[in-house]
Image (cartoon, rainbow, N blue to C red):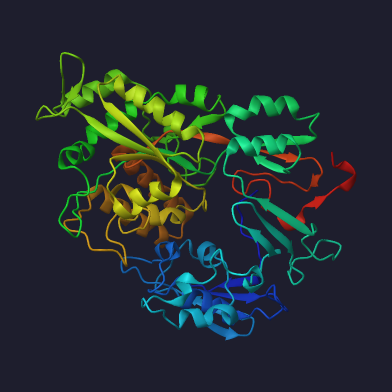
Length: 520
């Protein structure tokens, strides 16, 4: 609700005057869900042996790289309940990211990080799969898994060893049993919520009018948390590299288009985002111009100088002509060598509004002479094309909400990051790339993120991340589109809901209760 940090497994922490050391003190008598004690040794194991282990791929490593050298924090146990993290230089997001990563059970997982399979990979990489018996999975959260039925549901039971208690001293969570339904179809989700089978539902724009009419008789409440803490965008593949076999990842003709700034800016001006908001999102959204959460402390507004690409197709055409493009007698856009501008836009089917967004983008860009072929696929092959094969033209995608601190997006914006999808560089464990290049503006963003993490003065940090937003919006690695409102319908018999765009309706799950006399 406030985005402020609160104690959880750690009851307190102290930061040294030089800002290079944090000591966390764990709560007394912490236990894992199977009953064994949780100590500082588990914290050390989680960071040193798993998250920062070079043999285990993890996006946490991108977030915790420090300074020009990319060094990691060091961690050591002081006492049974006390653990110390040390960094080589001041690191402003250190507390939020060192203190906010799940702790793993050393007694259950240590053998998996010290043994290797026949393929030479650590056993950890194949530990705790979907075929693992649920009683072997150990956690420290409010619930433990009781049953898992693939493609149907996960059943959770209260963790009797969870640390939290309410104001009256009662053990938490208050709800004994939780059933997480696995329903891929948003249409089926809606039907099952309306029939009373589900207690909560993320409300899509097209379903809002219907559900709003049913809100009172259906005994549920639709919460509005404002714009979602996510980004939705169109991104072109600017990767100039070749595969290990010497094949260009992107058709060289198209690569020249995608790496032309005026081309990307023209596309941004040509997309009618207001129409997208009003039709596809049913008016339940806001135009997005920045990669940062508009409710966060580092957001730069258009009034403060952030560049905005409103719908101006005539400006789009002028930019293209200035860059050397031309038009045929039939109005088709041609490049410098007379090649017609035609490319493929990838999107995934799981997000119901994305195919509709892709269809509008195709229509909008046709108005400035571009031919767009939309290719819709399921999520896994979609991600494979973008993050592994890298052989795509452009894609319609999004990144889920993370921390309000920009460092949470370091793995997206760092040129070496694992989610730097518009120009994804060599990744550990993958075949090498030939001729991969980083542009000067990407290098500038790298510098700004390092400076932002080093700077402890909040006013100066805000200025650094303001420049980052200006550089990003000027160069358009991501063309931001529409940010949907965070709408969630919850049955009224669920008590204690404190909805927010950062956490949704169930972020404070241990505090929630069920009023049996209010069930429909």
